[in-house]
Length: 178
Image (cartoon, rainbow, N blue to C red; front, side):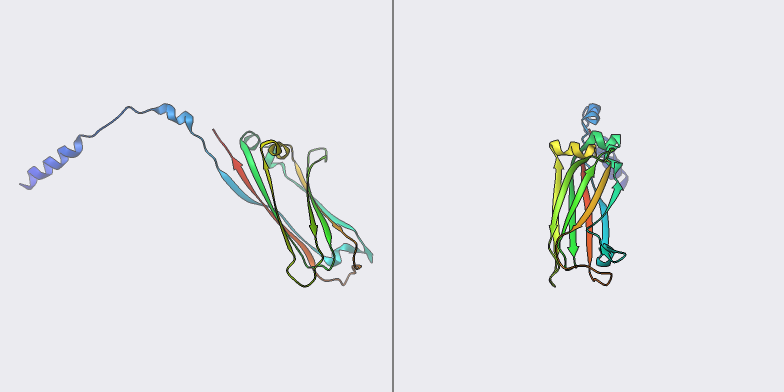
């Protein structure tokens, strides 16, 4: 009896429904990956604005950022979100500017920040800059990113001044691959 039930079950599973397969659907695949990455971080101590006893009004750095010139990114980039966070514990206000530059060091785009002086309370500034549609072409031409911190008028800094200016940034990149 068990043999007959086993044969019936096997026969039942041997019959199946099938339909024509459409292999052309493979050409309709649309991938939309999202990539998150750290962009840049830095910390400038208050005393680093003083060189040989003289206060320096500007500090900065330039980084290579040629990822957007890669053919894959250039063809598939649809949007990029840049997130910035600046924490100031120096009793001096700053104007921080992020410059997107091309190969010739021409400024393509500026992201400005007004950072108030530290007064004992949490002093964190956050900003998001979104590049999409026409603005995404700016990124496709960007090969360098410059960070410049300029001191605004206030108490004079010395080699013994305390505090720091910290910047953290990240990028979320949206691609469409068809």
